Image (cartoon, rainbow, N blue to C red; front, top):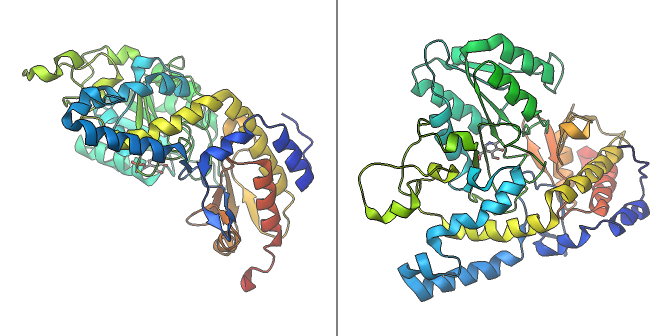
Length: 426
Ligand SMILES: Cc1ncc(COP(=O)(O)O)c(C=O)c1O
């Protein structure tokens, strides 16, 4: 997409005027700075609170007060089946069938549960491939899964790194490494969008390459869900998990989501750890011996639904769904493109954008790698009412989120960055 962007407030405001998603901003609470909304560029870390959450939470509290245990069946959204209210929206969100998704648990827990099913090392096939520099929780999960099966992480984990001196991992290096690992590879597990660089991987190609050597392919979509449209079913992805507190605005520690391809959901040979909520729903209260998994992603649930967490998820997904992933992505490409254009005009600070410049290889996020003074710039931004996010050792991440950020936000952020010219004095 080639745009003739302009570095002016009037131009940014013009783009806002023709933005069909503009009004969605009013559905969120913005933290305040000196009596005004902050410039919130941190939706890649924690999304803002939808205004509707409070009311819906009150409703749920009232249902609990009114019904007690009978709320399981008599609440407005009965707790027994609360997780079902997400199926349609989650399926649309990640490109899945309804049966392939469920809102349950939290991200790292789900990653473990899914690896228990899909990392089943045997004989020569015991290796896991992941991106170097994955989010620590993913690294720890993979490391301990490998140890649990008695392997040495140094031998069993293959990390794919960027070429020396580069920040982005070349897709062809991933595909080549998969081919070379061949039948030693049990699982390819990547973050869909790397948290640090903002690089979005070609999940379809990686999945196909993994399958060609007989390995499973699964993804942590923490930074991709709600950010980038995906077609997990059609891409034949085996499993995926994500959190709901970033681009899905469902609150800190919000309920996670999983995808398991239908061919595995209905396969009783795929081992899963049992809990009563994963058991065949119609027999749940028969109190029989013997775990009979549901034939859908719901069989990876363990416990009864965390309803209060899910209330926020319900409110937030409603807004996201109304905006629609397609429209959000269109705006997102423009908005992040605008941020990139403006950042390239900033000459007095020593940083480079390490996120791919090709929009098909990134979502909202841009990562600015500072040669020096990164932390000082970050602190100056904070002092001036910008909430961005700092990642050691020297990266500022910003994410203009199409659901609630405006072109004016992006322009104002740029103005503040321009004014950060005497770092030592700030
Ligand atoms: C890529 C990735 N994986 C895992 C996590 C940890 O998630 P949780 O604490 O919800 O398990 C995060 C959190 O930001 C993340 O970005």
